[in-house]
Image (tube, rainbow, N blue to C red):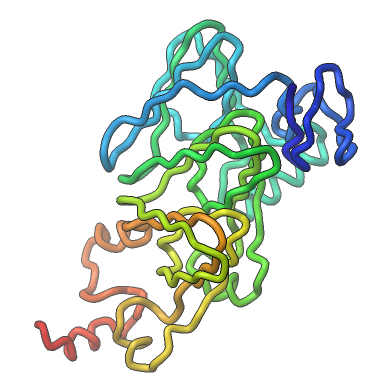
Length: 289
């Protein structure tokens, strides 16, 4: 039995159309259209390392996964790979290319299929950790841009736009998020260490806008002004914070790629660059220096 990841309905063997949403099942590119043509089997994997983690996936004969371009570290010779555009039709491929270009992602995804017992390794592009989600049929998780590593072919990867205008205009992550819909296992990468929160209904959390790694679709996301002119100008944390309201799971990272870039930039000025020219002025009023 397979599953439709558009609506989560079960697909029996030989089914040509989903009984839940009516979309065609099977055929070339079916996995990237939201369908699993074979029974789901959990991946055999291990995650090695601390802050430079590598996911080692041991594929069984015929097992297939897909990954973001450039995230593979190694593979055994019996694992075949092929670069494809997402979508089963020309229209879906073109629309997917447009959305991924807007999101700043690669136009292509790389598929790995093993002819025997093979192994593939994946890692992020900067120091950080890897998080695994086991998604039920129709369940989704939202992740920051560039967070996606790889997933089973039953998982649907799409670009999601922030629902609220204020969050898109003022949030450090912009309008674009990655939406991953089950069934299947999906692996994402973030910077530094991870902090996990399980928010209850109505329970809130304020987070630096760039420090959000992922959150469940049930979590509401918005942007809030920090309040107080002194805090806004001299706090070194920017003008806005992300407000996440439960219920649902939230994962926060301790280091962002932007922070790492600023620290490694030659001839960088003192203070936090997010506060602009006022950063150096803020240090003058810092009583600890």
